Length: 136
View 1 (tube, rainbow, N blue to C red):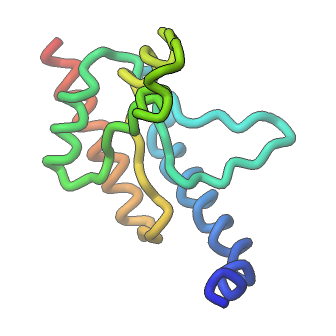
View 2 (view 1 turned 180 degrees about the vertical axis):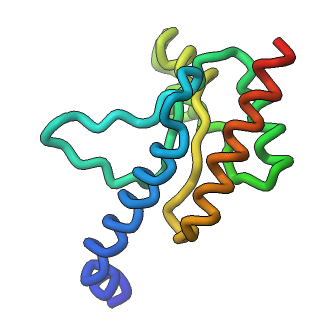
């Protein structure tokens, strides 16, 4: 019954996620050190989360600084082949490992920030980025 009721709200939920992700992406326009999610032509991204790829090595420093500013940006889960269920299967995925080292994620599935909060997130991203890249 709950799932059926939620399905009636699905389009509104997804539209909210897309609007939020687009607003966050707009906040980082012009920052060559951060790459937002790519949405291929003819596709729709429903943004369970807003993952960004960092084009610098100091991800953990960046996350510490942005978390200190109150922003909920975090590491993403390890690549799935690290799970115990896959331990017996041979795996070597250097590209997945490299992406994992540079990936940060904003879990945006459960809230609807205001425009003011979105701008604050943008300022925090820029401040944390400046702090990290100036110390390198």
